[in-house]
Length: 331
Image 1 (tube, helix red, strand yellow):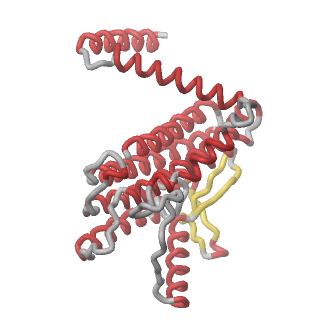
Image 2 (cartoon, rainbow, N blue to C red):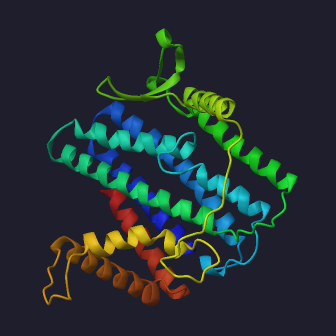
Image 3 (tube, rainbow, N blue to C red):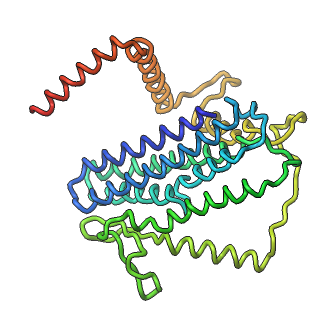
């Protein structure tokens, strides 16, 4: 479970570093200002979500989804709301706003042209795909970090605590305009979106996109109430879960949840047909695996040989880093 959370952390950190790279690439003052605000809000959402992730996973008392044996605690439930406050691109949540702003930054960079513009477009597309995978990881942690039992009794204290936490995080999204500089705030009074309630992404003084956090929240509430008024209280029914065709199961497993992605990785991204005696090689996929293995081996070497908790190595490391910083500053 912690490894799955680690994947999300790597993806989020990669997004932040890419955005900083975008900041130092372009000279457009307005775009650079928008990128910095995006990084701050995205980092805020990431911090909240990772706090919730380890609250949720840590309170299961297990290392693997299959080993979860106790019902969720209040801390586990609160952690899940923290996780969902930062789900990729989903409103209403502060993480959704951060993702929107970061992706807007990359796609605006594409309009500035040249090699940097092309790299910005490709980078934004790759980050959008990564955000989608991270969202799937969060959903998996949300559902499978509990042992689901039909006999669980409702605890009003837990319910109210979780509800209050969720409302607080949604409120943070609704008032997110307070984190945005006035240069990127506006409104459209003609359609009752008053000034100061709309966030605009822009570069070279040109508008690119817009979002209205407060109005998004209001619309979600209105449509939810209308749905409830028309259709009444949602009705649920239980069905037999599918477990990869295996007849012996207690419920829907995390392995089954990942079947779709595993089949994609096996059948589409990695080509080959060993049964017929012929196998084709995807050069791109082959290179990616080789690079990943080389990076992993290098990281292991550094971890075991250099950053191995030896005070002597750490002293040498700090002295070298200090000397390098002095040289860079003096240039």
